Image (cartoon, rainbow, N blue to C red; front, side):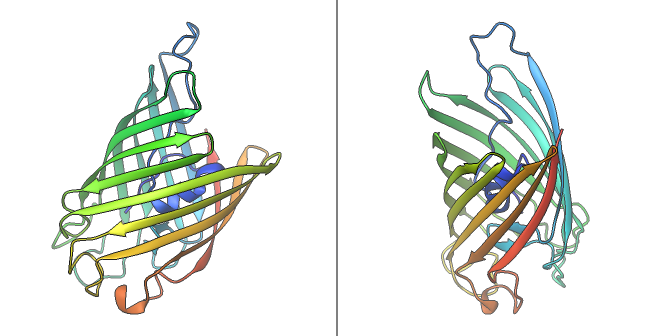
Length: 251
């Protein structure tokens, strides 16, 4: 389960929370020298792949990467993948997640406001039994370094019906190459059900991420947690508060 695009330290929080995609860089539609399209890629190694606060790699390391193509004025398509491990006997035993997405992102006039709308398909090749695959639609708005977003799925992971995700993110630069990012998200599952092992139908996830860029490589450490306990996640520690270390490179 993922909602990630670029693996830079500045957006590390969004990568673990699924807050929504943003362009690698804004393009000035009025600039006649702006490229018609741009291709970019990313690769990362993380100590624990956390998505919306819950481990997707059985609290183990994961390797991740993807690429994006951006078209003027503001359209983009891309794919992103990660190793996963759900340690499940329910048929969700694939070792790979592949996400495909497309959308449009733009500044609003000459202001500091921006908007991003799009679609994501989450694919888990190798799953047996019931499929974990699902789709989401998202919209986000931003002002300077603050953003809010909403994601919606008509049939969430493991065919667990409707799902809504509301998130807020804020980032700031402390000193050159050193950033701090905050995230909070609210997960609204199908009433009386969902993909959890309990009958809880909502939970909150949160994180604080410190990122540092050096020699073209991004390093981050994040404190990630949720309001869930072991009974909600199949008796595991997948949702407990933890530190996550990530090293990534954008190309």
